[in-house]
Length: 207
Image (cartoon, rainbow, N blue to C red):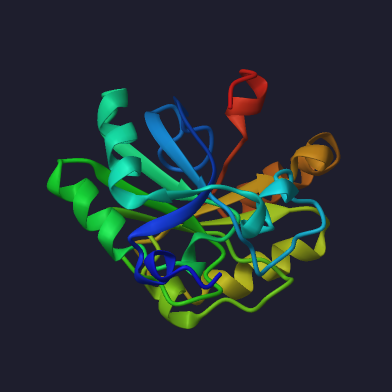
């Protein structure tokens, strides 16, 4: 995307934005405003938001307008997700949000340099593209999606790349949740540093 404002982080391609309840990971259950950026360089075959992959199909919004949306919501957490949000310079957006007293969270597969100022970094590595070690080292939580049994070994491999303070989560891929939940429970009983993450927003039928 050649737009100079996008390159500088003054504008971003936004697929959707909404106020909801965080459904996954450490902050599950908290009210937050989600900004879903468009564009992805990973391409998970089981992705449930494949419509976010092509940035050109979605409108570009000024970072200042995004901040206004968050402020208007009255919520104090803004979660930037995708797509893959690290494709963009997120310094202007996060600086402006934090100046307004908004906590900034990001959900990323870690495939590109992490820009911006973050109160919470959710690192969710994928097999389809190698993440950067620098992103893993900054993670507050690692969330590994369990689609098949080989993903447990993948989780342990990437657990070694995060800090000892990092929260560890295993989350069943939605279409495999009944098939994989028993294996996840048994794995965590044997490896109690890990915790279960569920997509509770889907059970609640909210965005």
